[in-house]
Image 1 (cartoon, rainbow, N blue to C red):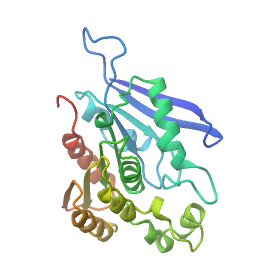
Image 2 (image 1 turned 90 degrees about the horizontal axis):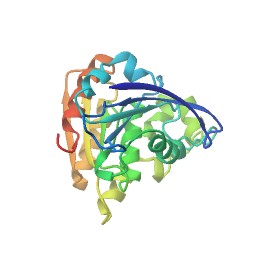
Image 3 (image 1 turned 90 degrees about the vertical axis):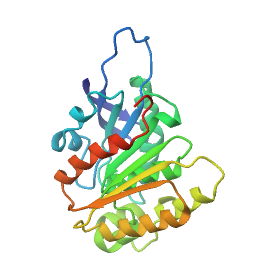
Image 4 (image 1 turned 30 degrees about the horizontal axis):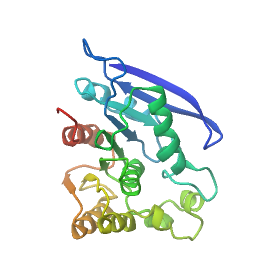
Length: 250
């Protein structure tokens, strides 16, 4: 397996950007240019693109799977076009996949394109899947910060920069409203995996989203158990996510 540290210019942001990428080794006799399924693996509020490699054994877990993993940096943006900042939603949903596919042999098939993340990244993964169900076949949230409206009190400084001080996040940033929109549509609907530790401070909002998604009839796999908001839990759960992903020939 190859581990690539990729630095590039993000026109969307107007700055240099970074992503870490894991690529499976080509199999003997594999046709040149063959594309592989891809997981966009997203970091949390206080992390960056190095976090998953530093704090989990993600490389070891995907070693025998035909899966590429793309881990971008988005700072404290909540994967959103910020009111007072930069267009991180445009970056992560448009520019990043386009450039990653240009640089690396990544599949452009919906059924082979996935997102996952922890905390803020869990929100980002579900946001990608629910806003772009035409591009993402499945998404997983681990200890996700799924109700961004709570951030007005929980992370007031970040919330003001991202959504506007005292402002509602808007339908395009509210996972509960996005879930309703997807459920009511005649278009494709992503498979969702959600997990949270019962001692996690975000547990109650995860239960609220679970009940909302179930009421809407979305394809949601939900798991919970002992655990708090920490890397030991996420290192364990990313293995479960990889087992759950609908990988071809898995």
